[in-house]
Amino acid sequence: ELDLNDNGNCSSDLAPAVVSMVTSNKLLEKLYLSGNNLNNDGVIQLAESLRNCSTLRIINFKRNQITCEAGEALASVISSNNRLEALYLSGNKLGSGAIKIATAIKSISTLKVLGL
Image 1 (cartoon, helix red, strand yellow):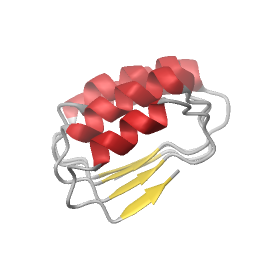
Image 2 (cartoon, helix red, strand yellow):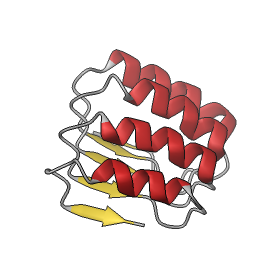
Image 3 (spheres, one colour):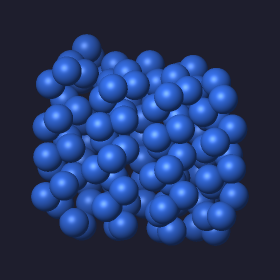
């Protein structure tokens, strides 16, 4: 479990550090990063590293200034994760990225909680 919720405006430093942790930790099940102002660039970096994290069950990216572009990157991660149980994305402006995410979660039978 990695809980870095509500660390404020540290997007330029936080995303690369978390990418490094996710890449080296093959057993990560819970990732809590709400309220960190990660914005699109940070979330896209994270999404690329999360593609190889097959153990991830909970993703919390609430309140991170995510828009359509990062929403699409997350949809790609979501569609390749067959263990995802909870996804929290409220407080972002996903726009059409929300449609991509909704399409991606249709195939996930393990998803129990969705926060948009």
